[in-house]
Amino acid sequence: MARRATSGASGTGGTRGASGAGAAGGPGREPGVKAARRPELRLPPLEPYPDGPLEPDGDYDGLEFRDLDLAGQDGGGARFMDCALTGCGLDETRLHHARFLDSVLRAPRGVGTRLTEVTLRDTEVLDARLGGVQMHGAVLERVVVRGGKIDYLNLRSARLKDVVFESCVLVEPDFGGAHLERVEFVDCALREADLTAATLKDVDLRGATELGITRGVERLAGAVISTGQLMDLAPVLAAQLGLRVL
Image (cartoon, rainbow, N blue to C red; front, side, top):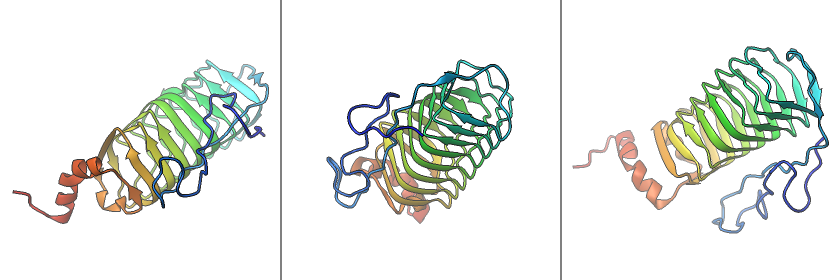
């Protein structure tokens, strides 16, 4: 298992959690707004992954997958513990029910990656270039998604707890029916998001550089936004209320 960092930056470029993470009133944080708890990772020395395709229900521990084309492969139900996937191609890769624990995904790229009901715990996703990612029913806990761009991210019915989206672009993400608790958007562009039937608790949207919600604006109860964002959302809120502004 990855060792927890106790001081300084992690060896994977991870960010230390904010002071008092999980408690209200951290630096720069209003009372009553709970901060997400970030993963703090130090991976052990990793062995290169030997040649060969992924295996369904495979067990991968302490391995580095570097610059591999995993397109179309089936790693459904696999467990990745203390692993790093760096620069790997994931076009149509099947990873449904897979588990990524204490791991890092650096610069993953691909279209149509199938991550249905995947589990990400104590994991970082860095500089992703992904489109049409299927994460329906996924479970994310203590996860940082930093940098890159993800188009059409399907997180319907997913559960996100202690998740940070930082310095990334999310285009038309679908959070329909999802449960979000202690989720932060920091320097993140959120474009045309769908919150239909979503449940939000301690979701901090104030750091979003763009905040566009096409559906489910009435589900924002449990989120925190800035005054400027309220003005930006005014037309959508008015439409939801059936209010005419003349």
